[in-house]
Image 1 (cartoon, helix red, strand yellow):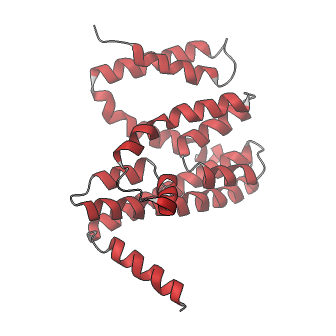
Image 2: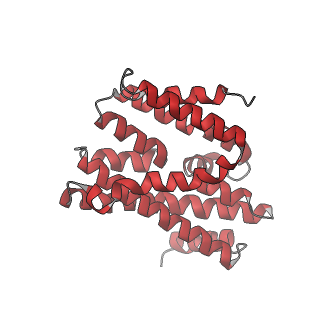
Image 3: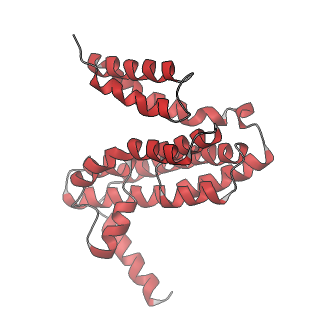
Length: 230
């Protein structure tokens, strides 16, 4: 083992040693779940006719499942790639407050660039839920790095499945990501205001589908946020 490998091993050991076993297990399970979603994404991208480099590049450079699914869905439906990119950026607008919240966890200088790149819903949640500063930073980095590795790996596996299985809906791969999103959203809909705004946005988006270009109905759904409870 060379000096660099020893140094990296020591660095990671010191960084993650503050985490409890249950926390590490939970992080690894979430990262594995993200990889499963990546399989769905990769298979759909292939079924839609995208070359392999498109989902792989997005999975490594964007690392944001919701916006990536939206992008390939809009483009595959005939939408303008610019509109698809705009929709993805709006979905990822939540990263702006995320960045402010976890600024002490991402690191500085060169490490800070990687720390920003691995910022996602999962790493932010695990990072902010820990008790001590050391545990928060360790959880953020462990989850972020796990997602950064397993998301593209899942996409690669899914791409292979998509090439062998032109119709991924036959085994339900097309429903994996929407089902996960629905499961995440349902608890929030217990609040009346959230339910009203989400329902208004969904209704507006569906009403615009027959008339608006592909990709625009998703953007119009954001107007549901302006709905107020009487």
